Each structure stands twice: as structure tokens, then as C-alpha cells.
Length: 218
Image (cartoon, rainbow, N blue to C red):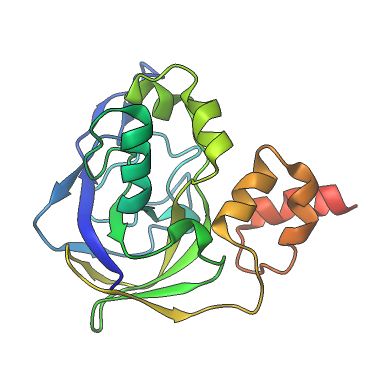
């Protein structure tokens, strides 16, 4: 059964990449129920969709299209073996560490029902690695390594607010009629821009990505 293993909230730290900012990449599991709601615009909104979470750099992170970040425990386990180091839930800065769900194969616009009557979340886009991510893990060449593997995890919108809890089930409530996955979008945005036209059917992509597609097509 697909479920949330842990809900992870930030412990704000000085950013390893930008001295003038704090970062919320240090996410740690909480046993408390966590309200989730749409945070509003990226630059001027509340940042994270999770109440009590922290977004350090709202120029590029947070906002409605990146309200919640999910990463599969199964993928963390693969990285743990590959890197030969322990990766606890939240190690990649994810809000939700999931199990039993192919996060990278989720379709853009796919909707997840969390629990019985809990929040409804919508897959919006992949995570793109940044220098802060690399500095946080202290792995040389991490951005390239992470990009090449193309298992980025998924950002989610909050369609219906509610409460997130560790152990809550995740049910795929609906799937759109296209084949544009999180992993495909990631590859198109990073190493394989020739794939950008293949993303056209995914109406639920953020406008900033749609603009890149239009530029490529025209």
C-alpha cells in the first residue's frame, strides 16, 4: 500500500551556499499532524505548503507549484547503497518520504488523496537540484550525479487543504490522459531539451515550464 512514511519539517540552518540566507533543506520527521494549504505565489507567498516548514530562498523555491516535495524511500535506499552512507527520511529535503509509490513515474496532473478525507495533492513538476542541495550533502559533483540518474522526486500542489500525518495512505485519485511523467519532464529540463515538445500534453505543468516548451517549439 502506498503511504507516507514520515512528514518532514525544516530545522532552519545557515545556508551553505548563500551566507545571507537561511535554508530549510534540513528536514526532519515530526510525529505531529501538519496542516497543509496552498502557500500562494513563490516570491510573495507563505513559502512552503506545510505549516511550520521553512523556505529559505523564495526566489526559486516554494509557492503553489512547489508547495510540497515528495521523495520515495525506495529511491533513498538506492542512493544510500550507491553512496555508501546513511540517508534518513528527509535527507533530500523532502516534506513527504513515501513508500509503495513510484514517485518519479507519476504523471503531471496526477492527484493523490492522502488518508480518508485528508488533503488532495496534485503532481506539478520535478525538483531540479541546486548548489545548496550539493553543499548540504557535501558530495562533490552531486548536481551532475543526481541529474544523470533522473530520479528527482515530485513537487505537489495543494488542491484541497488538510492535515498530513505519518502513516497516512496515499491513493492515486485521478490520472490525466497523457504519458508525461515527472522523470520525463526532468530529463527534458536538464540533459535532453529535445524532449521538451513531448511535454505539450501536460496541461498541469507550471507556466514557467510551459514558456520554455513554447520557446523550443517555436
